[in-house]
Image (cartoon, rainbow, N blue to C red):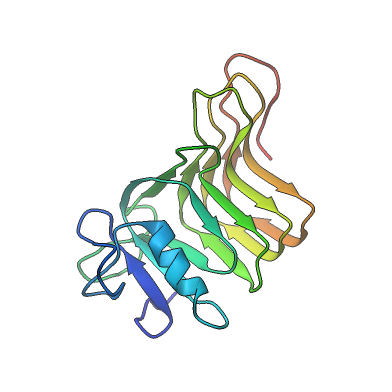
Length: 177
């Protein structure tokens, strides 16, 4: 995936600022800011995310997310440049009501732990044309159901090459997908 200022926005949690332009030279600090800006463009754009841990809830209605970049030259190697999203309320990432195709690739996504609710790493709901590839998806470690991936009332969901698991040690309702 060619990461270029003309086809997306850039996020670097360690060196970015949400007041910046979201370019390679001046990336945003949060994934949600990148998603919001990408979705404001007709047809949607990509969000390129540098290695690091992002403690935030992310919702996409049309932006594609690609992890595994290093921030100095924006080359991509998801194995070497681990990009982790830790959900803070429920799901780490939710794709819903998308108006454009969405790709989620090269991320580690964890649902929120330690709350009495079902929390997925990635939740896809009321969505269509979503491609989920090369991610590690983990549900929250909760007292209720935990799932790495939950998809409901959605069409054309492609899931390829992911490592998916629940993380619930207390009950038997823990699912990989």
